[in-house]
Image (tube, rainbow, N blue to C red; front, side, top):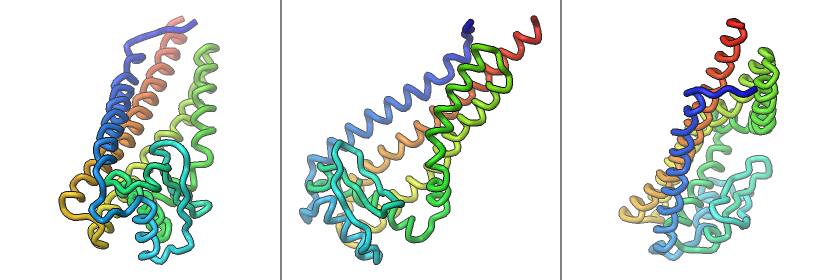
Length: 232
């Protein structure tokens, strides 16, 4: 039997923040995707210049399907840009490309938070899913140990999101700095790219907030079950 209380409302602010963050990112991205870069360089060209300037000539750049699917793969040492960013000259495209190149620079320097994220990324998805499943089973059958194991496993996503924040903020800081240092943007363009990267950063803040609120709900829910069991 399921019981509901005020703690079931706890994740809602995180859900709302996540929706707002996605809306803001897509609106800001779309706005500056229509603004061409003054030098006419595409995202792929900017990323290549940044990587080569850092001596990362071995890092390949590939297009990938979808929108905002851009990422740097440290295992294969490949920077993948969504097709619109790969071949388009826009402030959004070069901002995203420079950000992903920032991750490659982190990898080269063995940036500690990135190294930590790489170490746990493989188990995070499994631990999160397994944690939710164990928690729900423990909730249904009032199994204290399953509730606790579920909470500890789910905590992996909180740790991952927490580590992700400095990784993403640092990559954006590197992107803004290198774009200016290499003369790829003027001051006005730099401010526009700052807005794009700021909107992207908000999605990671929302991810951490959502994970924390969900974890808090699980802890309180587990406590309420134990409290009911002690009274019966």
